[in-house]
Image: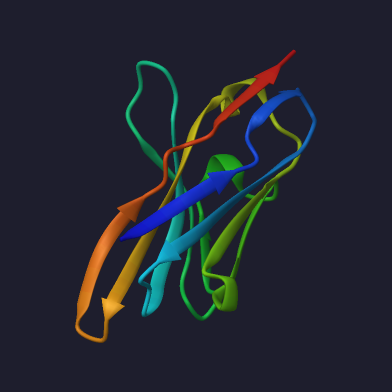
Length: 120
């Protein structure tokens, strides 16, 4: 069994910071791409940032220069540092990972999604 276990959400004032963590647990051979998505109430799930196994990153324009995605391959963990948070950043944040459970078998996994609420 493989799971993505997230932590770090909560309530923060506008301009504040939060750090999300997402750890892969269970029978993991290797994790390739990892990413964070978010879904606000009544809206579709949107990509926030991605990070490849080698560290190459990509951000959507709305979070560039405010969010930083990093990963620790030894810990099967991806992080999202969120600074200068805005009201429109309020959403459920979901971790995503492409996980090999063996050399030739890969599945996509999702975390449970901590709530991030930004208040004025």
